[in-house]
Amino acid sequence: MTLLDGKSLSNKIKEEVRVEVEQLKQEKGVTPGLAVVLVGDDAASATYVNSKHKACEKAGIYSEVHKKDSSTTQEELLKLIEKMNNDPKLDGILVQLPVPEHIDTTTVLEAINPLKDVDGFHPYNVGRMVSNLDAFLPATPFGVMRMFQEYNIDLIGKNVCIIGSSDIVGKPMASLLINAKATVEVCNSKTKDLKAHTLRADIVIVAAGRVNLVTADMINEGAIIIDVGINRLDNGKLVGDVDFEGCKDKCSFITPVPGGVGPMTIAMLLKNTVKAAKLREKRK
Image 1: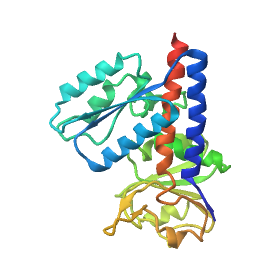
Image 2 (image 1 turned 135 degrees about the vertical axis):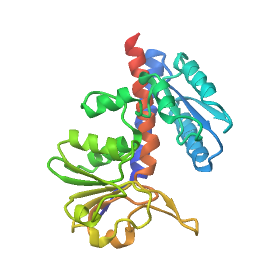
Image 3 (image 1 turned 90 degrees about the vertical axis):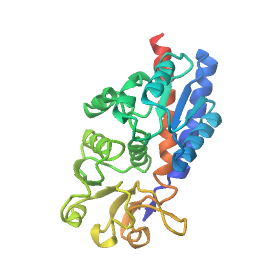
Image 4 (image 1 turned 60 degrees about the vertical axis):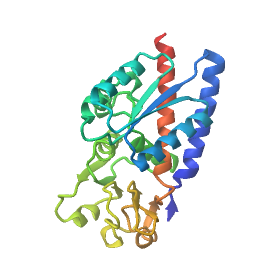
């Protein structure tokens, strides 16, 4: 069994980003800029936003964090997005999800300039991704694809079972794998006989948010397991959606939680921000 070490790989990517940023500054006089908007007081979201801000600073990326009260109206948020769309210092705009219930997520995401949509959630980028055209890719699936590349995992012709069909992970993950010539099944909470699907798979990707959803009897010998889930137990321990201890000796590759897919998300967000800065310079 080989552990897919997202922490060390993310550090490698962040160093790549730092070098790219330094080159942009020296050769083009361009400093990539990222703005993150946090609406409300969700503790997990606040921690994540803070991590993004620190990662930007270490990479030399200009960073803004806009913290808004949960009473912020949709109109106020849209005005802020419009201002950031027109700000030449900013190459990337990210609204941390989820937003409060009185704000329509789709309206907010569609308001972001697609050329600054470093989260890859705007329909423009989603459509280009599905069509296998150049686009900003959602950071978590993008990170998983980079892991496959780093560990020389060949996807062509592989049977892949994705558990979870969210717009953030499951759906874009399926599109990227289809583009890579894999054979993909997407399951969800309503899927009947989930085990029958996972046992057909060479690769199982789990992003459902349920502890021990995938157990050793549900996977083939030598399977590759990508655990995107993050769950906090009553004792405070972080675990994924896979029974790691039960499955690890049966797998050829497996991601730990924490330290697997999680660290890759911020690293790929930084990559997208630098890409946006390069595109801005190219448009000039």
